[in-house]
Each structure stands twice: as structure tokens, then as C-alpha cells.
Image (cartoon, rainbow, N blue to C red; front, top):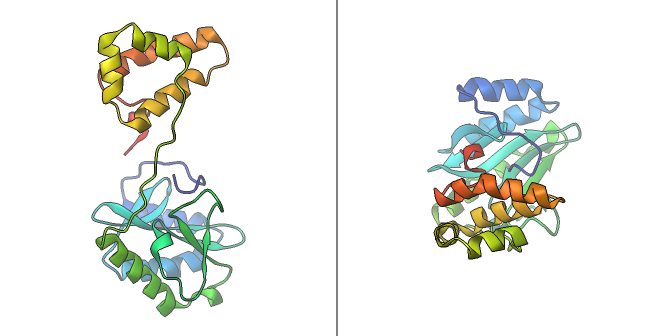
Length: 206
């Protein structure tokens, strides 16, 4: 997710979609300048999570967004940037490990040459494979799921073959219900998906 601000909407024409995004933004002028810098590089422009993102070989390097008080440039692996101008901030201090943000409150704040220097470094870092991969958090399995796994060898083996992230999604979904009957209902719905190796949220992922 793009820092929790946008909902993903599949859009057919990337250029038209980005143009529409800029038109609707309170920081259109700043974003157009940032976009022009990014389009001068080898990055590919796309829409993800409802906002413009810029990728290299399918991996997100940067994203842009505009808010009432500033325009933002997001470096998805910004932690590796040298940041000589000391302009980068952690989007969620204490929670964000890799993501770094550069904020522009007016057009005058945008030093085109400096921005491009940071962008090119981010591209090179991506080529060099510098990346902090998100680590799935460990979730305690709800009792209903534990009992189902203990009593069904096929289900247990299928659950064990899922990625840690997918296992956590199921555990959180089933265990997140307050009432026992709801947890059981959710479990029953999830069992066929687990057996077929399908993640709970796979259909929402692009």
C-alpha cells in the first residue's frame, strides 16, 4: 500500500489516468514538474493503489502524490539513499523501514537537478538489488484453526505450504471475529481456499 492513502483502482490507459490524477490534485503544478523529471529517466510510469508510480523491471522505485499542504515524492527503498541535502523523512516514523519521503510545499522548493540526482541514485540502487523486504509478522493461530489443522492431515499439509504472509492472513481473518460462531463460519469458508493453495487476499493483488 502506498502509505495507506490510496485505494487501488485498475485503469486501462496509464497516461490518461495519471493526467486525471494530476488534474484532481491540489498540488498539480508541483506534481507535473516532478513527473517531468521522472519521465526523463528509464523508469516506466504506471498507476498502482490509485496513484502514479515509477518502476524498473516491474519493481516500484518511486511514487508521487499531492496533498493540501505539500507534494510528495516517495522513494520505496529510500533508506539506501545518501541524502546529502538532508531532505528525506520517514513517512511513518518508527514504523517505516525502507520508505522515505521528500516533501515540497511550493514549486520553489523543487530543485530539478537535485531531485534528478536522488532519482538516478534510487534507480542505481534498484539495479544493485538494494532492498529491504517486508517481513510478515507472526500471528497466533486461533483455537478453531488449530483444531481444524490437527484433525485434518490434508488441510494441515496445505496450510504448511502457504507462505508465512498467507498463513497470517488466514489466522488474522478467522481469529479477528469476536464471536465463536463467526470464527467457525470464516474457517469453513477458508478451508477450500487453503487446500487449493489460494491466499485469502490473492484476488485483490495485482
